[in-house]
Length: 451
Image (cartoon, rainbow, N blue to C red):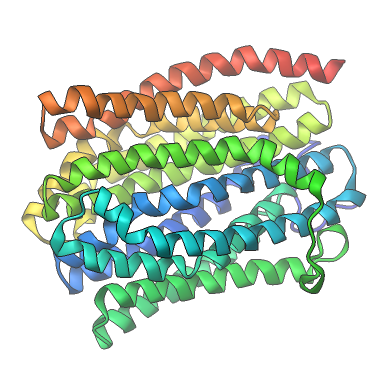
């Protein structure tokens, strides 16, 4: 079958260039998505005050806690369709696509309702400072109003990525990112809407990105075409998406729960610490976006080739994704570390806030490439339809270890430096376990192919 112009042939020919060309737009898309929140922080930090900046930043872990379960299911959507493509079962793709789009809308509405109801209770449990919590609740509730379109973007992008199209999701986020920055400046500087303004800008921008991805699917020909008037669910595909995606979703949710605990500890150091950690965390996320793009490439390329029964290419996908993903991330981290004193001033010029931000740069961001090692390996395992293994390892390594660290070590050695050291400590343990599991599990997976 002739490949469409936006579709990458993952089953034949050299892999390195295709993985790179797939991952690059995906990395840029993820960075742009992160820049939505970063733009909020930059505008608030430079044109309002640290209190508003802390109100926006303190929501990151809460958003992750409520969103990651449903975003994780989009991994299952990616693997489902990629497997169908690899096996040549294109006549079944249409039902899968309509099921996934319907799931996206259901997930979006569910998170919207949960977010509005639970915003204040969760922020209260996290110990958000009294001078911040009211603004934080306002931001969070407005943000969650955009959940249906955020889910449409994530699930729709998973559909497009499953066939090798990472360019159009990038285009959608590029346009939405530009709109987000312009609306931030308009609402905060011109209309003086501070936290409300940046939240509205984010929602409207997400409407654009989600709407564009849906438009791409509606305009598709053949099996990837979506008829929005006739959405439906096929039980078989829901179960397959849940089987693969639910472990990833639970992993993300539990991971966010551990970050909520860490955020609570950060909150205890005061408003300046919250603002500083929030500002520097954006660069942490940029590093994550790079390696996660190659992790998603590992999921999709491995899934198609596993569906086609090609053991050799599955192994090549993992090796090339690790080599390129970690190599590029190390270069990126080195640049951020060299420029950290300058780039942090994008968000704030407050000396106390900057001092706290530098702690995260030195003790976490400088070592963030370690995290990429287990993320890419976990992606390869999910591509082999072994989603539970990386989920369990990540929950134990990145979540349980962090909770034990915060509960046992940190109270006796209370400093912001010791608190942030929880990240590299957990990354090292998780990487060792994930790499070991990959080499054990893939032997069994490949034996299954040959039977």
